[in-house]
Image 1 (cartoon, helix red, strand yellow):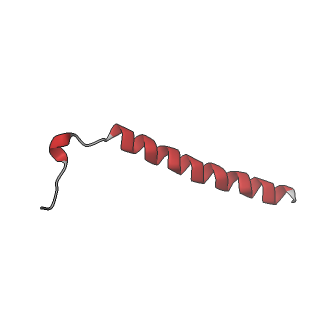
Image 2 (cartoon, rainbow, N blue to C red):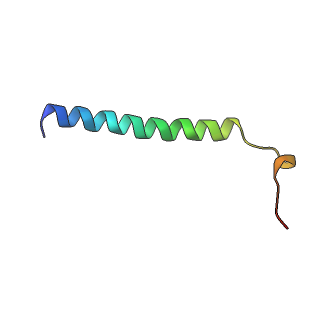
Length: 41
């Protein structure tokens, strides 16, 4: 693999894992309380 391919692979991995990490942080910070759960009965 040449240098450009390695750099593009690293950038893609950082974008994907960074997005996953930010999504997890967002879910952990904005966890709805029990009063916000709505069920269709």
